[in-house]
Amino acid sequence: MADQSKKQDKNIELLIIGGGAAGLTAGIYGARAKLETLIIEDELVGGQIRDAYAIENYPGFSSVGGVELAERMQRQSLEAGAVIDDMDAVVSVELSAAEKIVETNNYLYHAKALIIAAGSKRRQLPIAEEEKFRGNGIHYCELCDGRFYEGKHIAVVGGGSAAVGAVQHLSNYAAKITLIHRSEKLRADQKSQQALLENEKVEILWNSEIKEALGNERLSGVIVENRLDGTRQRIALDGIFVYIGSVARTGIYKEYLTLDAEGNLVAGEDCKTDVEGVFVAGDVRSKRIRQLTTAVSDGTVAALMAEEYIRQR
Image (tube, rainbow, N blue to C red; front, side, top):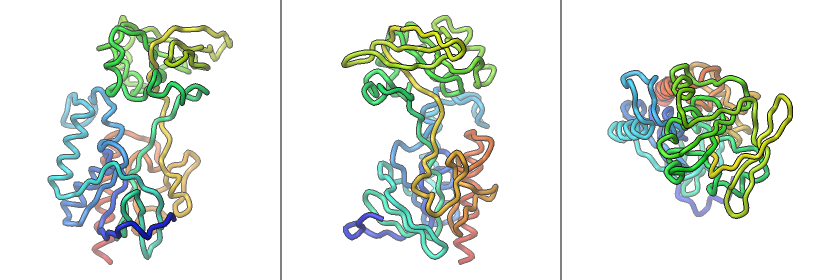
């Protein structure tokens, strides 16, 4: 652990790391159980659901914007009595049955029970020029940066629900969108795929990958390679939006908890980890299905298990 001598100690009953769907749900249940509940988040509260242009598979909403749903969850968690401390990153942890210590940039927390709902971070475009053009032609959030590409030609990289949803939103701005996908079929739901295929602004490059980004101060184009025959083409572009999956944010816990081959934290349906009193919820938990509804389910279970653990002690 880093030098903790100058950081203020805080005792808390239930500490939740991560303010996405799983963490906010856990916060609602923890606070309603009259536990002193704190959610810490190092980015915007709401997690990846904020990036969704429209969510059409969450019970109770035929369609709802990701930002709207995230703000509703945040508000409900606060109204239940949870406290949210955003923009404070976890620096280190010490986890055992006897104590759970979480150090952030600002505080040193001692928790009776801990729920890890840290989620994942966007996988970066794997090219040498990514860092050079990040935020200056290469982007990861269509809701944040799409408006800068009014009337422009942009590329969307990926073939899952996030990529297809991004195309839908970016169509409000861009004159042309080239979808670059490394496979020969999309992974989004059929309704979203149909809307994409009917979008006159969209051209799809199947079995393709970006190998190089071009430009001086700003992105001006890319070199795209066909994965089947190796042929390459140069495409002039104004911007790229990337949706090629996520990486679990679990490295800080590997000394104490078991990780699977993909780096996710191993826990059963009861969300219990190797360490008594430490639970895991959401996309960061090792499981087959990752959806908004499964994240909410995990948050519920983890909070109830944490309450039981605290009451028994």
